[in-house]
Length: 590
Image (cartoon, rainbow, N blue to C red; front, side, top):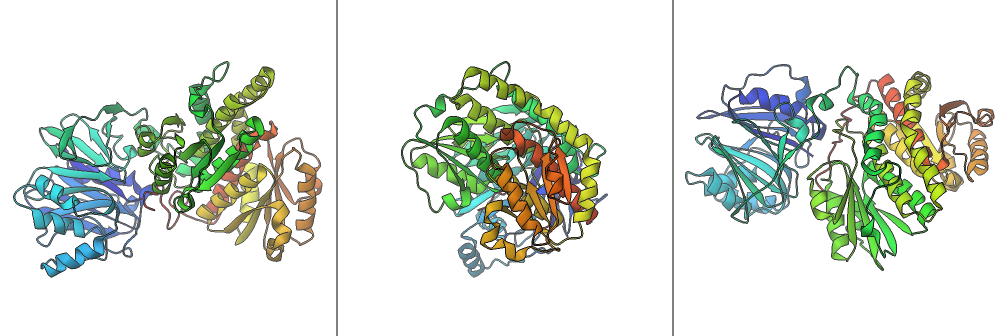
């Protein structure tokens, strides 16, 4: 989750690194630090968010490393902030990941006379490099990593060498190639201001940067890695006049849907699904918001194809894997670097499944594990809370389901036409967001909420509750509406509003009955319902109206409305929307 940056070139390294770290702050913001090499190490480490830093002069060197932290080992403090150094303050290291055997290594290094200053696992790395250092940081790093267990992407530098050495193993790391300058970072968004030429590093890669260029080793053998041109620009990673990245990214959703659809649909669906030939079932593995996309995918795929679909949290599947028959495993991960999902993909392959990934990032680890990749076209998503990427994931799942569907051609064509109308319908929701904001301001005073739905509305409720809890800090729970009577009714009352996903499908009448039951317990009810639904107003206190669409596509329109509702609720409460406490964007540790 932490963000790391390395720079070697002709610019002031502190300015490049601080600028880059600010664009990586969604990966961690409890502390930050920068080390500059210019014959000696100039080091600054601070607790708090680097986004609060307007200007900071650390040194005029053109070589350095930086880090923004999401705490795993040790509380946020200056001593636990990166970069970490060796005993002589000659070697500096920034690291993302977890060194699982750090305690054993630390105890041995202490016996050998090394002095530690932090509670972190990372600090063993500079001390190991110090142990093996004999005039070459490159050789010392190679000897160091033999001892490491766990996951890591780290960059190391030595004060008296003009060189950066970086290693990747189970944590993301990319190399940026500029004109007479080089960059290392956890994510491409960090360095888009300086270059769009990227090398996506692979597990086991060791990168050595000097003024003469770079070389990449894997298993001590030099390897070639292709330089990719990133299709995003620096403006995609800026707020562009919006108050927060979240609302900017919600507003980008219509174009994201258009771009993703254009990848797979023209007059008909242009998607090769040979990977699904002969499958007996589909397993969807994901985490967080991507898991909710998978649940919606289950309803859609089963409804259109008759193929059984099982959806598993990747973190749970990793410890209780079970596959039968000839399954197709679909792994959904926005970043392509979600640690639990990557491990689940490997387990699924081990059990003989064909693995497809749905991801947003070209060259990510998920794309290299998978047998086939389906890209969403969401562009960079900076806000920790996923919005446009979630909708894009749904679009790909719909396209896949329609391609596999056992329906007459004319019915498929009608559904494709409905999909093509989705961007306009999302835009209508955005144009009416002031009405949603009014309801959000009323909800902002509550500390508990319940979200409910039936059928395909159930995962909508789960995702709506997740958005509300992660950015507004209101305790919100998603539940199947029919299950309220089996316990959650005890929580209802005038202090617990209920947000109800109301869909005009076979669940509609029973959903109205469930709403009556909730109103009988004195809870305020907010319905998310079609704009032409006149009946719903009789049963609820407030209604968020969304454009009418085929019930199958209601998760798209309703989810956008719920994202806006969560955003304005959090804004009314004065919350840090883009960087909610304790959370990070890309979860790269298990």
